[in-house]
Length: 128
Image (cartoon, rainbow, N blue to C red; front, side):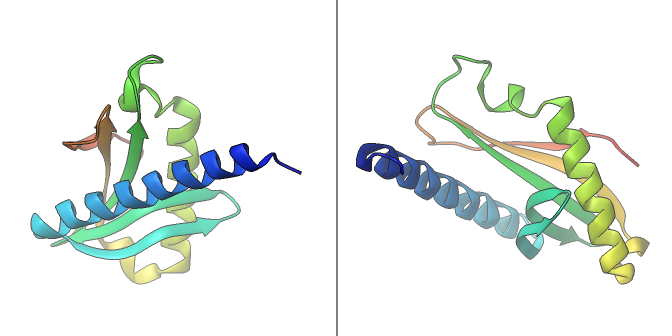
């Protein structure tokens, strides 16, 4: 069983992550995208935000890092993480065939440090 301070720290990190995803969803919505789903999960992994802009399906990975000590939020999207995102996206497309007509774009929404601003990298990586 986790010590009480570990549980509190884990809950605090989880709350920070939820708040970061909410801010990212608001940013996407303000930019004219329609958020279709949050935290899509399957056995392959999880997609933070799924949005649509015209005929483009946007898979948005939200990364929050309190410091740049290990390279910051951008560095945390490793090739393993990208591979997991792509596999999960394939699962999503197989489950919802109507989305297969859309172009797919992988974006990253990065929050470093104090979290005052979000860096939005459109087309952060390619897969299709």
